Length: 294
Image (cartoon, rainbow, N blue to C red; front, side, top):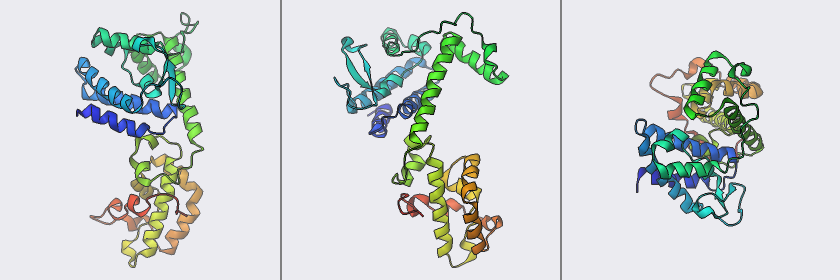
């Protein structure tokens, strides 16, 4: 079995039960990017990995005559123009125009068929729109200009596509913000790509990290074994961004202050030469899920 067949099978596992478009799109596009990184100088070599991944995922998610879940889209392109419902993964698992031009006629035709499912039409203002109207900062403007030059589409179409992608992400995250992650395992929250961008992930992991640190300190017999609970400690255990953790801790600072005062701890107590917090506190083992966390 090839590396990319295995990657496709892992993707199929991650996609089980997932119907959120933003999440599916992220998984598809991150896989495409991995293929690009694996073959940075040989565009033609990307065709086989794309095929291997696509076959592995389709083996688990075949096309259906009727829509079976929200994670599907309707298409009648390709495959003899047979009307069917395909998994959203295949809508987003695609290379660019330039890449398909480089890998031959078959792939180019596949790409053209894929574009038929897109609903974004060229903007009527394409001839009059210019990048200065967007009032971008210099760095962003340069990046947009390079992206447009690479794709070969108009500025108006680029803006429309960007709006569609960003809107999908925002709406997807808004829907996910109502998700309860209590029953999701700590292992999945830390390593499963499905949850990497979940808006509630950092808060749930912080809640579990505080619980783990408090239990550890309460059960230690020596002060030298204890850890001051602060932003840096939480970041180490959760891998969340500093600014995100800082904002979350504002809502429970009194709790942390009370606990640290109870054990007479300060940040200097976390300076333990030769010992890392993550070596002492195994968050996955100590708090396997959030169901019993107070």
